[in-house]
Image (cartoon, rainbow, N blue to C red; front, side, top):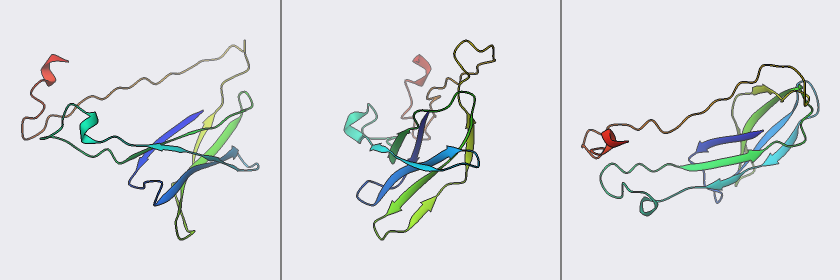
Length: 125
């Protein structure tokens, strides 16, 4: 299971992680990698630029098939305090060959028209 979220915290300010485990069972911590990108990495380098913040990704591994898990996002600040998200849950994939309904979510950047007209090429996507 891959968990990705954004925040305003760089890794100099806070260490991101996910606390997770079987519902009602032992919870463990998985670290998250952090990346961001700057104005020069994008085509919108002047008008319309919006800082993306920091993108964090953690991988929850060795899941038991068809088991229910809970998780929450965390950041450990430099002073040792923690900031937590609300709790979320998911069910792991079924056993290989098990007859079950699989759902997949696919999304993309739907774009956003800017007041300043910086999205002038948006109609050509």
